[in-house]
Image (tube, rainbow, N blue to C red; front, side, top):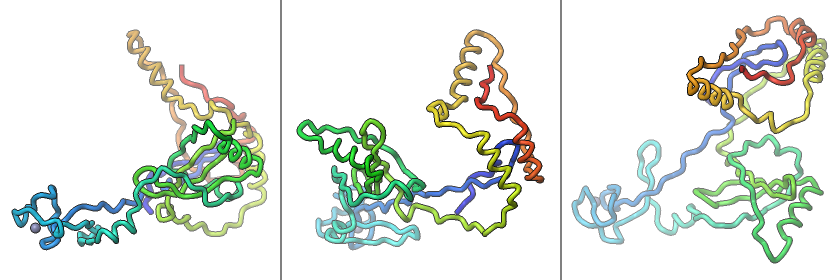
Length: 262
Ligand SMILES: [Zn+2]
């Protein structure tokens, strides 16, 4: 597992260094190509083998793929049909699972499923039942390039959202975390720091200020004005006395809304 970037995690006045590491890696797909069986040359055109300088007979053309070490693996049509499942426009639910326990699974991409059923309420009956029972659905889909696991979630207004997940071999093992004895006093302060900053989610939490700042910069430059000032980042100093810093965080008033530099 490679460290992507080092960063500082900040809450209140506390600053603590962290390594940001990927929880998932996208596994390369095996790419099949056509080869001239007698000479193992990859065919750019099925009508000509560049090595033999002659057209291969149909029985001499075979599918294969190269391993990372460069070894050519040839597969027969029967073998290919077994391992290569072609895409299918179906979303089959294998089972339903409780909401709890899967919320931390990394999602690759989310899609709305929109009902096109004019005959029955099959979609809506499922969606409402899943919401009532507080369950998600799981299964596997192959709508695009490859077969992937999915989780179907009943979201607001009876809509179903399909979350396409990473495959098991794409999820990186949890990094090792040794057991720690935590100071009860520090935990008490941390609890207060968190409680002081509790709030409800708002869609504005997903807004990114940089987009707004970039617009303002453009407007200012177009009008021939000086660029708006951008507030400077405070220096990053890892916290050494945690108890003291947690206590000081309580006294420092939490800023509910970040100010956008005017
Ligand atoms: Zn050849």
